[in-house]
Amino acid sequence: MIYITRRECFSSAHRLFNPAYSDEKNFETYGKCSNAGFHGHNYVMYVTVKGDVNPETGMVMNMKLLGDIVRQQVTDKLDHHNLNTDVDFLQGRITTSENIAIAAWEQLEGEIKKAGAELYKIKIAETENNYVEYYGI
Image 1 (spheres, helix red, strand yellow):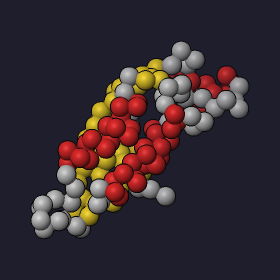
Image 2: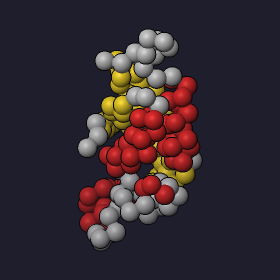
Image 3: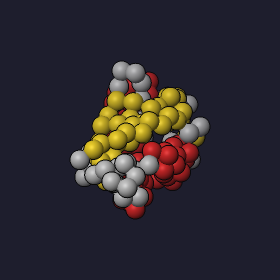
Image 4: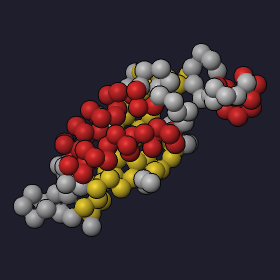
Protein backbone atom coordinates (compact mmCIF):
# COMPACT_ATOMS: atom_id res chain seq x y z
CA MET A 1 0.00 0.00 0.00
CA ILE A 2 1.37 3.40 -1.04
CA TYR A 3 0.15 6.79 0.15
CA ILE A 4 0.49 9.89 -2.03
CA THR A 5 -0.38 13.46 -1.10
CA ARG A 6 -1.35 16.49 -3.17
CA ARG A 7 -1.04 20.02 -1.71
CA GLU A 8 -3.43 22.76 -2.83
CA CYS A 9 -3.93 26.28 -1.45
CA PHE A 10 -6.93 28.57 -1.23
CA SER A 11 -7.71 31.95 0.32
CA SER A 12 -11.15 32.45 1.81
CA ALA A 13 -13.15 34.63 4.15
CA HIS A 14 -15.46 33.26 6.80
CA ARG A 15 -17.16 33.94 10.09
CA LEU A 16 -17.40 31.38 12.86
CA PHE A 17 -20.83 31.60 14.42
CA ASN A 18 -23.76 29.47 15.38
CA PRO A 19 -27.04 31.12 14.35
CA ALA A 20 -28.73 29.58 17.39
CA TYR A 21 -26.37 31.53 19.71
CA SER A 22 -26.59 35.14 20.77
CA ASP A 23 -23.81 37.51 19.67
CA GLU A 24 -22.40 37.25 23.19
CA LYS A 25 -22.40 33.43 23.15
CA ASN A 26 -20.79 33.41 19.69
CA PHE A 27 -18.04 35.74 20.90
CA GLU A 28 -17.56 33.60 24.02
CA THR A 29 -17.27 30.48 21.84
CA TYR A 30 -15.35 31.75 18.80
CA GLY A 31 -13.71 34.98 20.00
CA LYS A 32 -12.76 37.50 17.32
CA CYS A 33 -13.42 34.86 14.66
CA SER A 34 -17.14 35.54 15.22
CA ASN A 35 -16.78 39.12 13.92
CA ALA A 36 -19.81 39.87 11.76
CA GLY A 37 -17.49 41.54 9.22
CA PHE A 38 -15.78 38.21 8.46
CA HIS A 39 -12.02 37.53 8.34
CA GLY A 40 -9.77 35.53 6.05
CA HIS A 41 -7.13 32.83 5.92
CA ASN A 42 -4.66 31.45 3.42
CA TYR A 43 -5.48 27.77 3.81
CA VAL A 44 -3.33 24.85 2.75
CA MET A 45 -5.08 21.56 2.04
CA TYR A 46 -3.30 18.21 1.75
CA VAL A 47 -5.24 15.37 0.15
CA THR A 48 -3.76 11.92 0.74
CA VAL A 49 -4.89 8.90 -1.24
CA LYS A 50 -3.80 5.30 -0.96
CA GLY A 51 -3.66 2.28 -3.17
CA ASP A 52 -1.47 -0.25 -4.83
CA VAL A 53 1.03 0.76 -7.46
CA ASN A 54 -0.29 0.00 -10.92
CA PRO A 55 2.48 -2.04 -12.54
CA GLU A 56 1.64 -0.61 -15.96
CA THR A 57 1.95 3.08 -14.91
CA GLY A 58 4.12 2.84 -11.81
CA MET A 59 1.63 5.08 -9.98
CA VAL A 60 -1.12 4.78 -7.41
CA MET A 61 -2.84 7.68 -9.15
CA ASN A 62 -1.70 10.32 -11.57
CA MET A 63 -0.81 13.39 -9.45
CA LYS A 64 -1.99 15.79 -12.16
CA LEU A 65 -5.36 14.07 -12.20
CA LEU A 66 -5.52 14.21 -8.39
CA GLY A 67 -4.74 17.93 -8.50
CA ASP A 68 -7.39 18.49 -11.16
CA ILE A 69 -10.01 16.66 -9.08
CA VAL A 70 -9.14 18.58 -5.90
CA ARG A 71 -9.27 21.93 -7.69
CA GLN A 72 -12.47 21.21 -9.63
CA GLN A 73 -14.39 19.66 -6.75
CA VAL A 74 -13.12 21.79 -3.85
CA THR A 75 -10.48 24.50 -3.99
CA ASP A 76 -11.78 26.40 -7.05
CA LYS A 77 -15.10 26.67 -5.19
CA LEU A 78 -13.39 27.92 -1.99
CA ASP A 79 -10.64 30.16 -3.33
CA HIS A 80 -11.41 33.89 -3.01
CA HIS A 81 -14.91 33.19 -1.78
CA ASN A 82 -16.82 33.72 1.43
CA LEU A 83 -17.26 30.26 2.94
CA ASN A 84 -20.44 31.26 4.76
CA THR A 85 -22.27 32.72 1.78
CA ASP A 86 -20.74 31.52 -1.49
CA VAL A 87 -20.01 27.79 -1.16
CA ASP A 88 -22.93 25.44 -1.74
CA PHE A 89 -21.40 22.42 0.00
CA LEU A 90 -20.77 24.43 3.19
CA GLN A 91 -24.29 25.83 3.52
CA GLY A 92 -25.80 25.05 6.93
CA ARG A 93 -22.39 24.27 8.47
CA ILE A 94 -20.28 26.29 10.86
CA THR A 95 -17.23 27.04 8.72
CA THR A 96 -14.57 25.64 11.02
CA SER A 97 -11.58 23.88 9.51
CA GLU A 98 -13.08 20.66 10.87
CA ASN A 99 -16.27 21.13 8.86
CA ILE A 100 -14.36 22.26 5.77
CA ALA A 101 -12.34 19.02 5.91
CA ILE A 102 -15.49 16.90 6.26
CA ALA A 103 -17.22 18.72 3.39
CA ALA A 104 -14.12 18.41 1.19
CA TRP A 105 -14.05 14.66 1.89
CA GLU A 106 -17.66 14.38 0.76
CA GLN A 107 -16.82 16.23 -2.48
CA LEU A 108 -13.70 14.19 -3.25
CA GLU A 109 -14.29 10.61 -2.14
CA GLY A 110 -16.34 9.44 -5.11
CA GLU A 111 -14.20 11.15 -7.75
CA ILE A 112 -11.00 9.69 -6.32
CA LYS A 113 -12.56 6.25 -6.21
CA LYS A 114 -13.53 6.59 -9.90
CA ALA A 115 -9.85 7.33 -10.60
CA GLY A 116 -8.86 4.03 -8.98
CA ALA A 117 -7.53 5.18 -5.60
CA GLU A 118 -8.95 5.49 -2.10
CA LEU A 119 -9.17 8.76 -0.19
CA TYR A 120 -7.17 8.32 3.03
CA LYS A 121 -6.84 11.73 4.70
CA ILE A 122 -7.57 15.42 4.31
CA LYS A 123 -5.41 17.84 6.25
CA ILE A 124 -6.28 21.53 6.32
CA ALA A 125 -3.91 24.09 7.78
CA GLU A 126 -5.78 27.28 8.65
CA THR A 127 -2.67 28.97 10.01
CA GLU A 128 0.90 27.80 10.40
CA ASN A 129 0.00 26.89 13.99
CA ASN A 130 -3.41 25.25 13.53
CA TYR A 131 -4.47 22.34 11.35
CA VAL A 132 -7.02 19.53 11.31
CA GLU A 133 -6.81 16.03 9.87
CA TYR A 134 -9.84 14.02 8.79
CA TYR A 135 -9.77 10.31 7.96
CA GLY A 136 -13.36 9.83 6.87
CA ILE A 137 -16.39 8.49 8.61
